[in-house]
Length: 439
Image 1 (cartoon, rainbow, N blue to C red):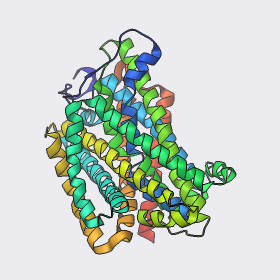
Image 2 (cartoon, helix red, strand yellow; image 1 turned 135 degrees about the vertical axis):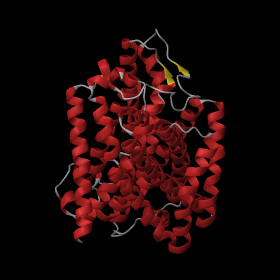
Image 3 (cartoon, rainbow, N blue to C red; image 1 turned 30 degrees about the horizontal axis):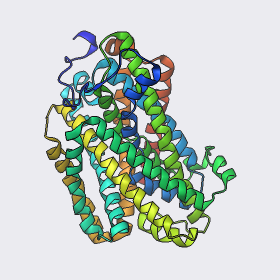
């Protein structure tokens, strides 16, 4: 097959949005970059979903600023991997799901599809719980009812998709702006020790040696470098109409990489803020077992001496749940259409995946209450971490292949860094599993 692929390139995923945003052929660099700004922020949203909050809050309250190093390293990994996603999407004209379908036999492609769906279900689980808790904290809606109410967000997805992809991007940027403002105010109230914050970004061997710390570190890794985002970004870059020539595609890869890098730096600031808030309030006060989002809400007011802090936290949590639900839906469409070429209406796809996640969330909420939801949030992030190698390894393989990528093959230094990242992820996951098996 020409181009090193087993199958020819098929119909693009998200076909209604494919090449729907025009990119100027002439003009300044900044004008062209403005046309590419957007997909990176949708990707960034996936790096700060409610599951990330639970792991970051647990890590900050239990170990202080120590796990800031994990947040930083995870973000660097994310920047490199998302750069490869942009390269794959533009250079091969395929998203990661399509690339797996076109490169691997069905005996391998279908299990990869199933694992990707499990990762999306785990992501959806975190979003359901986070949104339900946000509704509970702001409006007093019981968690059990809030879990069911989250199914209605399908109408938000439909409304945004109906008016155009740029409106989806604008909605996400708006939500990120609100979240950033909320945490900026809370951090100012908490007045952390900035010397300790800076030292927290330096990694230590204790992170690997301490099993509890490793578990939370893997949770942060799973919440930061999320497998569904690799599928998402490789599909979203194709919403730009950048042209078919080699120079145009090379410029598109460059601009898409800048977009995702800037957006992920914002994601790091928010993720670090969550951990810093927990370390400078709960850890400092000796409350080292805070993991439930409801606990955070109730503890913030007395610790910071302000009733505004818990309200800001709840607003940010709700905005986070609403924004990440959009990206999960788009990821689900890309994965299903790319792997097995099944094209469902957006509302049906959203309702299907949401029902899969609502059932366990509702059961745990009813029978285990708040503590159960916190444990479920952290567990969902560890599931994502364990699934990561099955998305990262194919991505690195494809972008390193001259036969598949042609002139757009990744530079050797970039491939080497990506291989190192894949090795770290696999090693950490194996160690975690061995620790659990051996007790």
